[in-house]
Image (cartoon, rainbow, N blue to C red; front, side, top):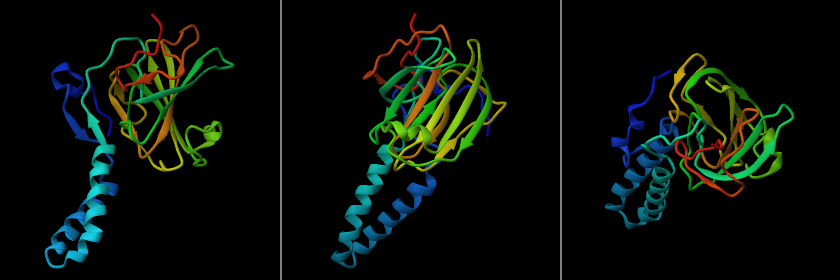
Length: 219
């Protein structure tokens, strides 16, 4: 449901880690299976063949779905995603698209690049090619529009070959703080943000970004 600015963005919350919203359908059954097989191992060592990989999978999912608290960075626009800048492209309408590739090792909770009001959250059906592939522009995606002090800011969450579920946390009409959590992409993906005309990027291809922290606009 729509929420206001998050207290988790305060500097005093830095260092805390929680699990991302929307992970229960994936994590709960895996953790339950790991717990059950661990108990059954006491009855028969053969259950260890199932318990060990399930425990490892549960641990991996806990790491993947981590959602650390962060103090927001400075800048008119900040990165919506953890990852690496894959491309920076001028757009026909004068905007600049910054594409950020998220590997399975990155935090996959995405954050608002600027404060304002969510004006649109549109789900667009599509394919599931790897997010680093140029054809991923046609993948399943969620297109966000924010009304901000800089005007309309567009952000696109793009599903990858494994990430087949995008979970928005907010809806049209919601007020959002810069760096506030807005959604989750499960398992490897990409996030694009479009810098308004006249704003030059402060990042380059290969720059590692931190969601809610890394500045995208050049001073």
